[in-house]
Image (cartoon, rainbow, N blue to C red; front, side, top):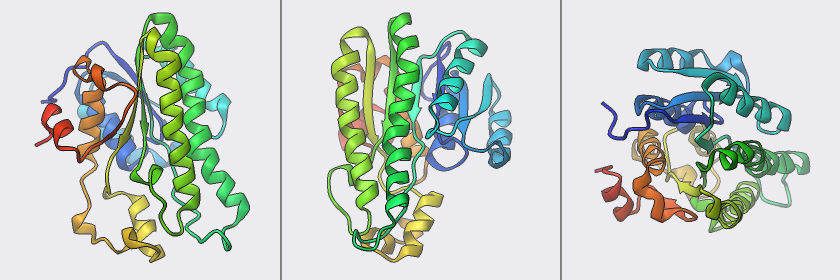
Length: 255
């Protein structure tokens, strides 16, 4: 049984094929929301589809390459057409690479990272906001990172993109908060995902040397995201929040 009730809400989660995105999509579905799970390629979504089917409820798996605004807009429109509204957007899609020192980084790969991690989040906000504002409110959660606030060797693209996302969250809160749209940046901690496998393989900086058994389960940040979608978290709107923060964990009943 889900600890939060999001019955009647409609959510779009980007980057939902695996990792944190899949965990968030499943948690929102368990909480009673209708979920549109955006994936870059439908061919990668078989496991996600099976998991969503196992939970039950209303869901749709939708192609959504966040670097292509038309696909993001189509995912938003698909949410509204299928379920009648859009209450929640979780901008989760992201990449870590290129992991390289600046003097060695491939410029095209560096720019692609910014496009996915920052421009992709803006695409989600731009497509969702007109619907949320017209209906009188909504929640947008940007999956942030501690890397938004401190540099890490070899991660200049990722750090810069997530830092930009943090300012995007603040801009969103300034502009849309007074009109009923709550914005959050959620830092999930170091979570056991495919991205962490890529990090460990790189051998660059201290994060790559963390043991897999010390990484957090994706359900923790997924539960935190679900809680942020409830009215109980309204006073935290506009902030960057860390899943590991004791007060947040107490309020969200994360243990």
